[in-house]
Image 1 (cartoon, rainbow, N blue to C red):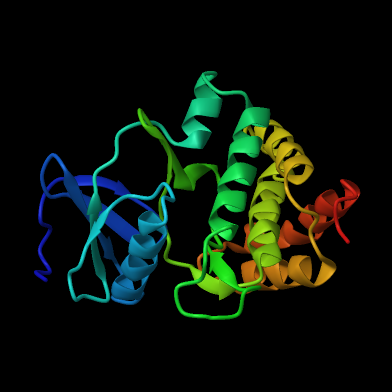
Image 2 (image 1 turned 135 degrees about the vertical axis):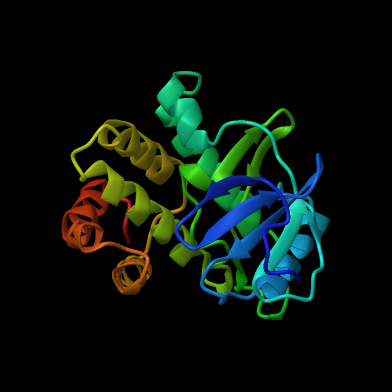
Length: 225
């Protein structure tokens, strides 16, 4: 794939930039030259084939470049902040998306207890398209225990809830709805989710320092077994 930008820059995340290719497709390029776009695309194609709401993908043969369907609509977070979606409903949407994902068979493992995990499902990774919510950014995807996926989403929301900024109130409401509408978290899964968040190089020191309070908030809901 070429290293020059293929089209207009549409957006940037912590690790990647998204460029327009045409009206129907975009290219997401990892800025650090890492990642596994081919593996990520294979997982997205797998869950799409089973009816899960993700963008369609096209193979590129690249570790850094992923070509996928161009989506239109606000993120779940944008819809909440604009007042078009209640944060409690947003939390329930996340819970339903996790349940749907964990009902699908794994791509590689034959263990019936193992499922595809997103491991970064939060309100900025859900696009509310005219056809319904679609889940993006599968760069953290693995196969394993669904409890870990739920715990990661809970910790992400809890971090936002204890940050003390304009997102804290909506995030707290989303967390309550997520935990009320999902299977109980396990302590081992919560511990592993906290460990992974702490070790994430994309996390700032301030974000890492919120993890203790985030853990207490998750445990305070009494949904951990």
